[in-house]
Length: 91
Image (cartoon, rainbow, N blue to C red; front, side, top):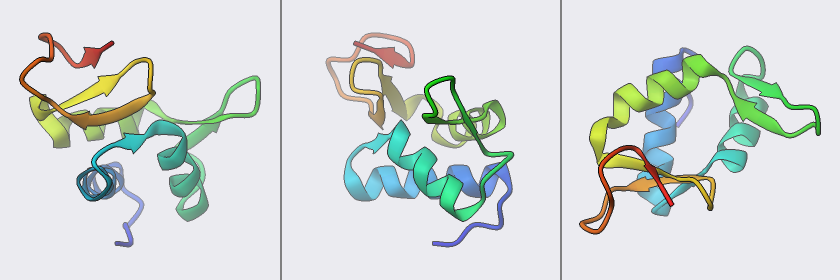
């Protein structure tokens, strides 16, 4: 799926990838979005690792609602399961 480069379109692509793969790793998403669109969707930290910029994260949160959680240790998004605690971040 190609995106038009808008944060909403990129977020829809991310959600589709998460559904297809069962989880979406932040680093993999950032690499692919950087390849497709580059700045302003992706920036780099001091170690040179890509990360998604706030507008993309905000659009993804809005698109995924409460059904998707962030695995802090694994650094990926996945669907919420029955054993998850309240909130978006899970250990």
